[in-house]
Length: 274
Image (cartoon, rainbow, N blue to C red):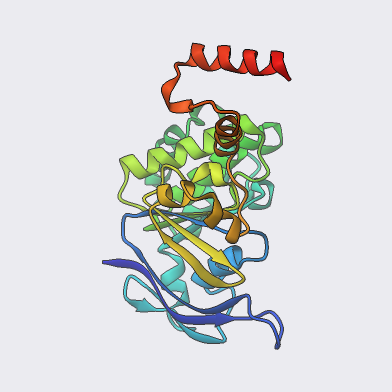
């Protein structure tokens, strides 16, 4: 079954420019999809269209076979949870516990059940020891984990991470990408990670590349990662590991035939002759 079905979708912020241009694609239920592209490619615009924050100029969006319209937008939003770029913009409560509770209160969850739900989802993201902590005292990665717990507690069928790691330091990025992978392994949620960071895509089931509002690539991540020319054509930054491997190959070093110790020796030798 398709989780999201997009049919000939177009949207523009101005009358003469389209941010999304005649886009057609299907995201399958239970799939972990990474949506990538350079700045201005239409990634975040597409996320806003998913939940009805923007109205398409042409085309349709259906979520679990329910077409997105004015009279269905609330029902569809209940199925989609979004974690945004800046976790500070998602905090409502004065403590971690209050923040996770906020969405549950809006859903009118039985108060007698609420505490166990809060404990459950705080535990899932590793924040059980911080329930009474003020959000301002948390690190960026911890704040984002709380934001994820708050969204997960509402039990959406689809989780969208909209540049959720772009404002984090390397430790925070690792924490959140690890959590995404855990969600993929341990839940039946449909996961969509919108990013411009090529390092995130290797563990995904599927990679969708947008360029100038058009679909540029749709398939497994590895063929894209193995094709630097295609990534360059899509205006994507080649991952550091691939750039390093290519530079080593240019120096006649076969990265596949060396152990780690052998690679260190080769690099030292190369450095000594430069």
